Image (cartoon, rainbow, N blue to C red; front, side):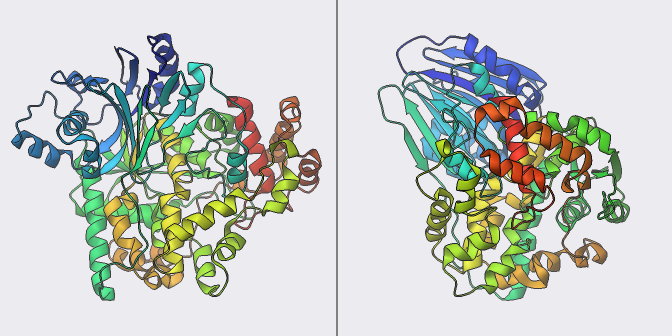
Length: 590
């Protein structure tokens, strides 16, 4: 896992090497082990390395193929690279390193752009084609690894985060009204290619983008999830196929590493089954990590007792971290500063503080993100299922949107209004795209293929990589996702959600964890709008920077501040927190 950046001049000029030099510090935390730069004609690349596979200097980046001059900077892990390496060796290729980066570079030289469909893993990379004089940007199918870019008539710049692009200088930081609409409607998910800044875009998951001077950009989708019914199977056959696919996903993410692999163990079903499957796969001296916070009168601040059950069952080296409220509030701005885009999930701060501790013990962890979206674990999926007969869009929006378009217009200053309800149009288009299959399966496909890329996938990447910690997410293995997407939705919605996952967990996970009601990562100090948290948000929204920016309608802000504990979204998020988090991020970044 690493950080990448670079620039391709499109105006015939030589690159200013200080551009990449300015970008590298902004991705240093993603790759604390080493740094490198490379220039070839109009192109320059930069790389910060986190050494996970092939720890030697032979795997250093940028990596250049001496036979054809092609050069790569790569962020991620390719889980099937040993098989691809053998295939390439049979075709006559010789390798200087033992890692996955060189395999990508040689595969591109052998098979061209279409080679990406052969990759299994999480990845974002840029390849300089020395013959074609073009740059190819590629992002993995599930969008696990981020890839941002800025494209003007003069240049293409790319990076693993927005902070690096901003550090490069000259970026158009005007606010994108479409992104603001998505941010405040889709629970802080701003689907690609938009970001909050007009001058920064992000590559869509499952896409590649080729840029060359004098030619139009060529963006191509190389993978598309479908919600169409899969192979006909009995219920037992579905369970067997699901467990086999999950076992393979976990084992892949265990075997491909030259350093120990741990688990972020929350005490919930998803992370608990990962521990069980890792133990089953032969993982030894497995380290598990969980974090807790101070209780509030209405809610406990930790799930230690459930994590302890799993750790005891499998004899893991278990680490518990308790974070006092004063530390949480003191370091919350740090967590927001680490966000490439604003994220309202309050457990982002939990992941940030947990990642700091975990990174002192291991470099790689497996995490349960994505299971709820793949297997239908959230409460709104059954509600949508029961609303048969409602129009597709209403069936989704009335149970998911944080606010309707009419309220968004009241919230946002007219200078930033969009000419239509762009979030409804976006969701309607996606539901039509996944037109085959049951309604809930179409919603889940939309969630997995688009919305969770920004929440929770981006959240986990940003918070772990802030401390040079690689998070691997087996539930987003694309073969597992493809299998489950075609499964009858009744198997997923059974038992209050994630029914089939609960079934295959029996014997691997204590029944007390499987049978308890769905729980959410508790961060009580931020959940309840009062005291120090309320003062914090009031200061942000009343700051001169917020008033001068003028994004929010002041009457709306004043209404929320006057009744801070009265305004919540359909998913029970604080509307005041949504505004304050967004504004704090803008104050820190643009």
